[in-house]
Amino acid sequence: MPRFYGHPLGGLQPSKSGYVEVVDMGGARLYWEEYGAASGRPLFAILGATTKIPSMGHFVQVAVERGYRVLLYESRGIGRSSCNAVGRQTTTLLAADAQAVLDGAWGTDSRFALFGISMGGMVAQELLYRLVAAGQKSRILAASLHVTSPGSWLRVPSFLHLPLMMMAFKPPTPAPASSAVPAAGNAPTSGKPGAAKKGGGGGAMFTDDADFAARYSLDTVFGKAWLDGPAPPEATDPAAIGVNPATAIATPVVGAAAIAKPPELAAAGDGAGGAVQLHVNAGAGGDAAAANGGSGSAVLTRREAVWRVFTVHWRETLALHAPNDYPAVACHVTAVLSHYLQPHRAAAIRAAGLRISVGVSTADPFFPEAAQRQLATALGAAVVQVVGTGHLDGAMLDGVYGAFDGALGWLLDTASKQEASAGGAGR
Image 1 (spheres, helix red, strand yellow):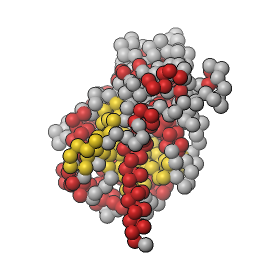
Image 2 (tube, rainbow, N blue to C red; image 1 turned 90 degrees about the vertical axis):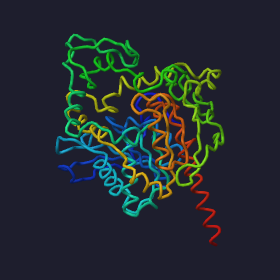
Image 3 (cartoon, rainbow, N blue to C red; image 1 turned 60 degrees about the horizontal axis):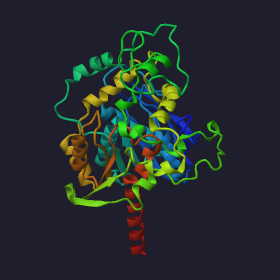
């Protein structure tokens, strides 16, 4: 059973880990981890900007429980991965890195499902194109791209990418030594916006725990209704409330129940290339956990549950610690500014007939809903899944169930049935 309190990985340890050396743009050493049984369904997950492997801990826990074998890595310069050059990065470069990790860890003939979130979804788009262009489309069992965008031809000039990000991520002046560090899980802001800054400067970097607690806002990356809804029972530490751990999580999985079995799939006409577009509402909004409210298990809000994880583990999950993660993180995020899935590349992916889903946030602060749906149309996505209103509603707590009970699980199950049917017909 997933554990959404304490460390994001809930005690899971990687079954394998290692490094892959790449030589492009000065070279880098990329760290990867694998979770789950060797017999599990292979799932390659590409992280979003500024994040490290533990940031996907809740996703990994659910994936392993559902029988997946998950491969993740940290991008060049982020976390335990090194980068030998300071400079502008592109999603094309990072897709080459992703393939190097994939081929190095699982082999050049490996078959896998692909998951990419936020900037990781942009990198995943380029990886799809690389594999299709190389005649390796058969390696891709399915692809699920969440809260991401195809980019735009109208972009900031490339020579400004790095200066802009260097300014955006410039570390703030350290807070005075007398600043008190809030107790874990009891920060005064609870991740709400409008808190006063500590120390001088600003930007997206944080000098210490007190600075993070004072300035980081959960409302920037999560939907307010989702945050203020009741947390699932998996987010409550049984030991902290005197509940027997063996019986603490006895209710059905929240999220799975909200989606229904099977998901409500409503045909919305033919997509590009003749693929039927299906719309799946994953129920990741504020009402998703309400079904569990009467059980007595929901003892805190999602905001409180997420904030407890972030305030204790933000350095392990986010590459936003000044000055340790600077300037590497600024170089990393320039890839967002450079990304544009050119029409001929999208057309090549669409023509390959891949099983693709796109997860959409309806009020995303970084990628407009229209751009996310434009990506679905450009790729001929089979499924468009509403994953919430905030950028990361589908990435933590019960929000992560949507990927497996919704689009990705449906695509893989459908593919398995089709392959089994084809195999039976051939006998």
